[in-house]
Length: 435
Image (cartoon, helix red, strand yellow):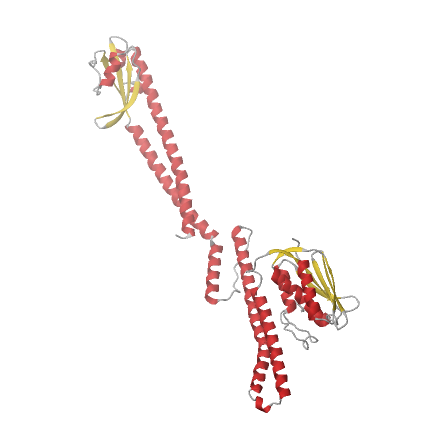
């Protein structure tokens, strides 16, 4: 069952319940009012008869009571001559026998297949009771007409409600149909550039806006993935080609002297290390932070460990560290990788005998090197994937180190930036989100 049909049925059902309740209320109120008028008139007629039973019997067919039939009973239960032919049962005879203590009663009776209203009231001696009946055919006819009218009104109201519900649901669900059609087209074509109209400020308009935002994010993600694959293919092609060339040369090693073979093996080892580093960086970026569990991380401990490692990796560079306690929520392995990439980058650019200042305080890690600094045209791109400045192309690396730093920072709600340092060199800042 479609949502549109469900909304239509719900609207029709609600109106049906309301109209049915209103119709039943009107019907029973009118029925009660009409029967109350009949009972009031019968009581009035009975009072007249009680005052003068004989005269009332003779004038039963006149005045406002002209439609009533009257029968008088003796205390013995016998019917007084001149009374109308009205069925007499034991309940009526009981009233006649106990006329001094018996109360009157009113009830519906059927006489010769017709519907009548009957009142039985006690009389004084020697009479026992009076029975008055009035035909209810006119009342029943009016109630039948009222029932028909209410039924027609109810059916009309339900039909109108169903039609209105169908129109409203059609109009209301139009954005949903557009969303569905767009989703189906995207599924069929695989092109996330599709957009839907989202005007207004209602929930469905917000749904359309959210859907378009999702499509934009999906389009950007697909485009990023395509660029990532293209860049990775390009970056992998160079070392693979070099490896293939060196291997082909080694296949003719009988023509090479030992020194040439040693250089080729050294090149193969270097290229293999570059390939391993490139693949590790690619996997690091592709994996992201989604599948890793976050814990409370002491960043100061990671920085101290990375500084010790950098001193061993770059023995000719002085790493001076000032570390304060900083605790954040994150993934230790990824944070450690980002910190190491910053220190490794500073170590590569800092000349031998110079120093790198590492400062951790107030949820920020600052790494200041004494290298050539960052050119203005390179400053906006140093954290892009595979980007390598003209001066960096002569150094080993894949152009992924600082891209990983930015990826880790953003995954942890932080940021990273690069700027020139006073007196030369560069300062890279890794900011952590406050815990």
